[in-house]
Structures are given as structure tokens and as C-alpha cells.
Length: 271
Ligand SMILES: [Zn+2]
Image (tube, rainbow, N blue to C red; front, side):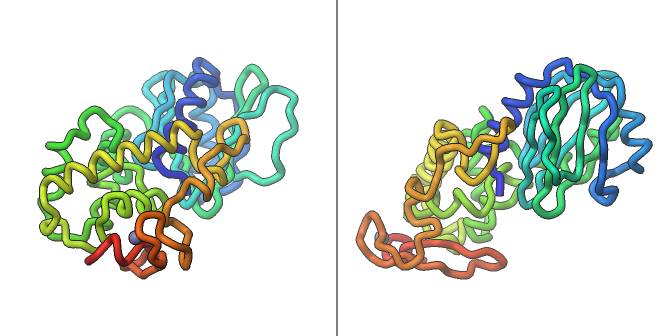
């Protein structure tokens, strides 16, 4: 599943590549992923120009002319791919957006994604995105900000995955983040002392920055269909059940944590 590093990279590539491209038709094959009927969606987006592309949490925001926004949610994951004029399109996709210069991009959602076209005040009222939290790489994600988030009795993993508290981390990068911080995923937050909270905040940012440097997860495609460098050899304990812990040599375990699984070293991360 794409998380913050992959989404940041994708949004940046889209922003650079698509600036001022003008929409002209397309094909929307899955009406249940849309907020408007297919015909109306295509009619409304036609003629609009792309001004800016950015991400917020797990959403890609495409700011358009005439006060419109096209919002894409990658759901459990998606390939959003750019196609130059004349290039053969992939067979499978739910959305194809064409531009006046003959180029286009497609979205293939792995499971269920969303494509929504919003106009004017609809953006500020958009339920799924209006309360999304800032991401750990935003300037506002200071130690003070993170300490405030940590004034809670819930479990640390639940806080980090909560998109209304912290934007963009899912169940991939979190395993190594908590391992490096030597914190058990189910530890109640109010039992973690302040220096450890500060350290955790720094580790979250360092991990995501490192992933961005490597281009994001190797099994996620970028806008140009390339796979990047963050592969299994970069993980410390994630997906390494039964292997030795790189710190203490103990055995890495996969445990159930609510509705998700976690990879931990039970010696380094005591509850
Ligand atoms: Zn260990």
C-alpha cells in the first residue's frame, strides 16, 4: 500500500509533468468510484487546466482552473501512470484522463479507489479529506505537536495509523519505526516518557525521509511506471518473521494488533 513517501514522490512527479495540461475527455469504467455520473464527470472536467498537484494523507489533490479539484484516493494501492501521446495504454484501468496535447494518465486501483471532482466550497466540506491531519514531514510536525498528539491513553500504533492525527503512515513503515524506537505497538501512549516520545517523532521523520531518498517502496510503481529502491533488504524487522533481530539476535515475531499484524522483536520491544 502506498504510504507517505510513495504519495509524495507521485504527487511531485505529477506536479512537474502535468502543469497546465488541459483535460479533454477520457474513460471512466467504474462509476461506483466516482462522486458524479460518468457523463457529467467527463463533461465538467473537460477544458480544465491543471494548476498544482499535491498530496494530503493518502489522497492526491489535483488543483484545477475555475476553482475545481480532482481528488484521487488510492485505497489499498493503485497504479497512476503517465502516457505520452501515441503510447499504448495498459489494458486494465478504472480511469483514463486525456489531455488536449494527446498525453494522458490512467488509474488502476488495486481494490477500491476514489476519483472525485469537487467545485468551490465542496472541497472544504469534503467529508473524507477535510479533517486529514498534517503529515510527519510537514513543518508543523514539531516535537511539541507530536507531544500533544501523545496525550492519549490509546495504543501507540493506533495513534500513528490514525489519519485524523497523523497523515500518511500505514501498516508498512510502522514496523521498523516502532522497532527502532524500541516501543511495543500496543504500548499505551501515556506510559511512554517524554524523551522517548521525542525520539519516536524523530525516528518517524528519518524513516520516511530515507524511504523518499530511495524512491519509495520497490513494489509500488511511480508515475512513469518505474519501481524504486526501498526493498526487503532495507527493512529491519518488517516482514521478517522467524529471522534474527538485527539488534539482539532474538527471533522476530509476527503478532496480531487489533485488525492489523505487527512485526516486532519481543526482547527489544517489551510491552
Ligand atoms: Zn531484538
